[in-house]
Length: 213
Image (cartoon, rainbow, N blue to C red; front, side):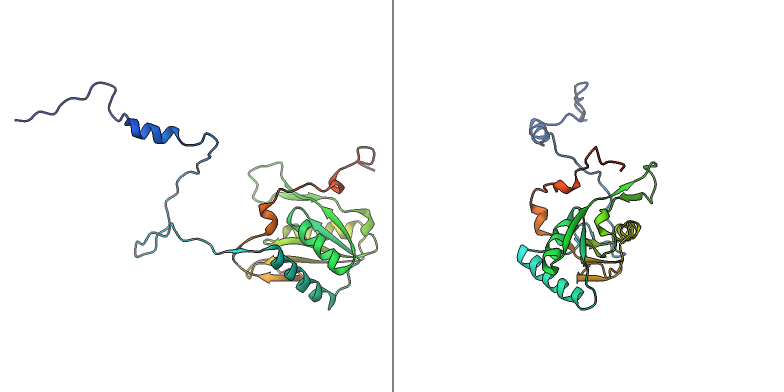
């Protein structure tokens, strides 16, 4: 009768030298996401490889979209100032203000909430006082919920803007509908500036002597 050879105490489950080598070769700065069970259809076919469509925009594509957007805006609106919401809206807004021949102002809108578990964080930001009495165009790169655009609109009206409309380069078919947009798609859009380092615009800096004025 064959007998099982007992393993030495403390060696059960011990990885081989090859496994250890694989483990230690993982970069120390690599963050691994927790594993989640992949959704399955009733047929049981694994859907883990299904991916959302990705659409890349080159700088040439971006320029064409901006020019198309500018022509569309001119047909029904004559803004006197363009406000770009950081950071994607700064790229779009800067190019659009140049195409429309009007002054450009970059702003930052932040999501803040005292309760980190809140599903509805408040949006905060400031608008330049130079918008008073002007027709303003609020610009962002993508319209999703529309919260940022709506807050920016309210803030522009608060500082005395005469009229405010909004626009984005991309909007979602089932999402918020801005006054103007260049492209409507459900795809994940990769913008040309996503590959470049973002340099903070100096106009975002707050002068301590003017703060609270």
